[in-house]
Length: 304
Ligand SMILES: Nc1nc2c(ncn2[C@@H]2O[C@H](COP(=O)(O)OP(=O)(O)OP(=O)(O)O)[C@@H](O)[C@H]2O)c(=O)[nH]1
Image 1 (cartoon, rainbow, N blue to C red):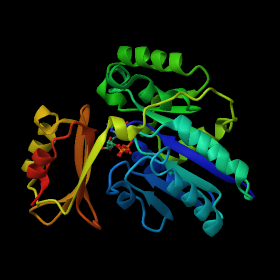
Image 2 (image 1 turned 90 degrees about the horizontal axis):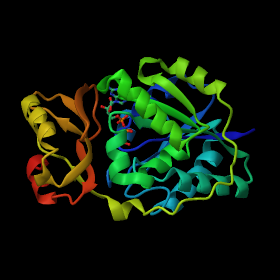
Image 3 (image 1 turned 60 degrees about the horizontal axis):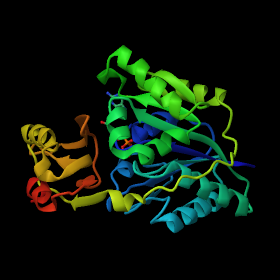
Image 4 (image 1 turned 45 degrees about the vertical axis):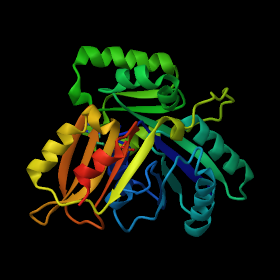
């Protein structure tokens, strides 16, 4: 019996976890998930249904600094659960070309029949041009190596701009299946049906680009047990995270307690921010990713 690897990649805040939350409950067969967080604390794992087998790998990218943990996780999950599918959510700053190479090598060496099925990249269209300009080939690696591309944050840009961005994405990947509408508006079953119409990824002997390791380009800062917030303070905090006094924050996410004893989950990128109530909470935490982070200023904002 084959075990299929499906990689759901995408830059910081593109919508990988949102995508997984939609498809996981509708997938057929036994499914396990590997969640990779660049930060020292995991947030996304807490948002996935708890009955679901999940392995979280923190504090680095599975393509470089924590590659051994990644190999071990695939091998252990494959042996322990004999799953039909292994879903992998790399960190937003992971290199897809490196992850493909690692999965291909695991597949070759394993006694089990492990195959790559889908290489999905979610592209936040509202941030595409900003990230191409600032991170160039590092950012484009996830787009160039995908064989399926889903577009997110459609609602933030005009149709004309969207057409232009899709053509730029196409210039970077001539062969991928690109869903030219918001996947967000489809339910999990429809997305899985779409995935089933796309042929599985075929190993291509592409030249692998040499990319700078993410930990040289980005830094991270995590806070366990942050202070209690009012709703208004959360709005103010999210609005202020773009300020350069914090450094250059590219991603912030976390789970916070409100002064009403409710819990919320928040998301921030320089292009959008949002928070929502959580029904249950295992732990409160904050993870920040960016460059030149002013850790003291961030601590003053979030710590007790
Ligand atoms: N409006 C809109 N919001 C979206 C869409 N996709 C994702 N989001 C929101 O964007 C935020 C980030 O989404 P996530 O799914 O956490 O993104 P991620 O790629 O897992 O982020 P990382 O944790 O950085 O890896 C959340 O608030 C989502 O609800 C979309 O297509 N439209």
